[in-house]
Image (cartoon, rainbow, N blue to C red; front, side, top):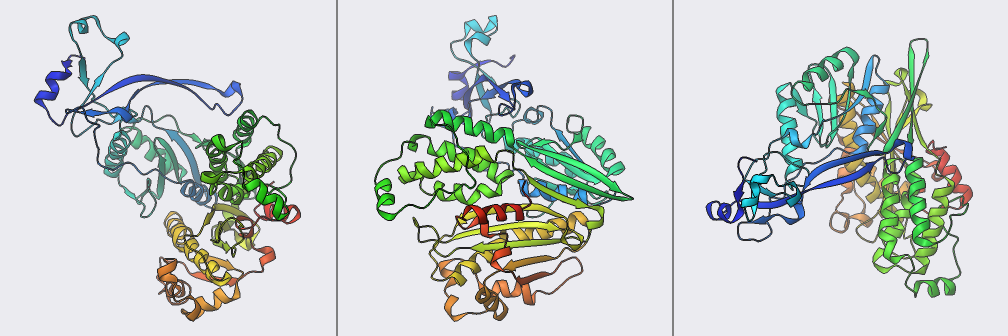
Length: 524
């Protein structure tokens, strides 16, 4: 406050200066939960959407920002802690994280609401003060906090985990941290981890660590049992209250109550009736994006059974019709009916030699509204003998170009699965466990397997141009890759369609088949 100036004078003296305003922001944390769990929180924020430069033009900042961690990375951390003896899995928040970091670069000056002006400011016309700390809302605040945090943990011996944003490994102790903005998830040998956290807490102010519970809006309910010296950890991913809140919002927007439904897919209609519905704009069109994205977050966090239905509806937001309304009604009916269905994972210390199993899948023009195929995949960890499993990641997405055969669609899906998920997870788990980890990819298309074995297919030779993937690369991954002591193997095996776990991500399964598919994912 002692550096208060007139903005007109500042802009004359410093042509790099920028100006914005600050204001209070009040919200309810855990609003999706019961009111007894609500926490009213207030913070002072900068209006980052309205920062002007010395010429009164909107300020343009370098397109550089912090890159937060992924939920896939967090699940890998949970799995790694579950299979190692005397390992702890802890969680902590940075205390007022952003304003632990100072704002660097050109000075940003701020205007205060007039009600906050001290008496001595009354003599000014447009008083401003320099923003010293990385206040939430400033476009570069996230990057400043991450830089501040990294400088301090790197000095303690941490290093980045390649390919995994905001994930760090401490080679001396074997501990690892993964950070989402200011939420820390930490694993390591119990005594070493606690000692390391104490060291970190001297340079970064953190809350007292606790066992992992609610992280990124998803409750992680863990139960630990012992059979002799073998510790078994079962983790349940719970978003019941979030989903029920989503259904409440849907009922308010649609004016209808949710009904019972045993799958998220509406029954198929005769073509004339379908065309009639497609010709009219849907009533839910103004709310479509909000309704679908609300569910998409839950689908990515803990409900893989919702992915395909949401993805197909999301592709029609710009041309929403009454058939989309019908399908959205059915989707929300299923969500309300199955709100208490939870994804589960279980691993024990006997499962240290676990294997990564990948289930890539694709349909061939299975969506009547698009010629493009859908790629789906599910990646999980299998413990000793396959009795224990733990989910790592899943997805359902449209391919970028139309495929001319099932073999082509399956090859594209296999390539995406290996490059984007299975191999990066293999690299991460090898580091966290300190040993090679194998990958087994399950493929139900024989022609795809043969093409990968040969490394060439005359029918698929245009793939590098049309789909940006190469059979030769897949051949090297599964058949020619030179094995090193610190790398695991990648194996490709034939899997019957009936038992393939990726089927649920690419097709609108009938209710009886859908139920079986959900059970295969260990959801109940």
